[in-house]
Length: 361
Image (cartoon, rainbow, N blue to C red):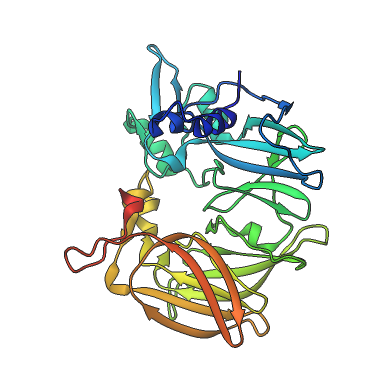
């Protein structure tokens, strides 16, 4: 049986299907195999260059629901993609041949689901059927964040981590895709109980030993709140040294905590765009779902901050039109200017007030 990824590639390449929905269907179906190595497979159209060789790990959405055990077993579904159980794919091209494999990520979130439970950790969008009152109380009492890291896989000093928009990472063995364990950095950031929001796309430039990311420290400036309730702690990791340690380079004070999914990195600068889609921290703390507590406020515009990595200071800051984006496409320097190419979402300005809260739709 072909894997879901190969089914998708086959469907997209086949003109006989002609139905876009049918060709995309394998993306939104549960994986049924624990680990499926496929290959090396025969290349039937053209040839792969002898010099082409790579290993690639990616993750994504593997299982869209589960069974709740009880007197009458009930199937439940996750209502939002960010909550779907994570899996890992492995692609390999070598000597003109292609190999593939996949495996579910054996997180706590996954283990609860396959053992006949719904994860008692906050989700983005909830489930159908909804949590029972007892399950809601258990979820609200939970102090840990979900370890269902289904957004990105990064290589940090040779270690492969699955990560997401919350802090934490699970290490994966690239040889057989085994879920090894939750990985903990050997540093002070690891001890911060209120550091639970991060960025799903850390960045490392070619030939640079440092990987950059941030961790949001909730109420990091309490009790004074002089510059802002929270702070973003931008750090770097020297990926050439063991043990892996995060070194905080600059704290950015913020009153409102934006959903900042990615930032730009050039040889001399980091560029942050604080979109006016905000984490409502107290609402999230008293709820089982995150999405209803993500609030869009176009009146605040998009704040742009430029950090000079040579001095670790904010050298430029201004506010522009309200917009929203998940991903950056490119960033580079031209003389004294920094050019950032961002894939922004289309805003609805039909009422004269931009609305980009499509994360909530």
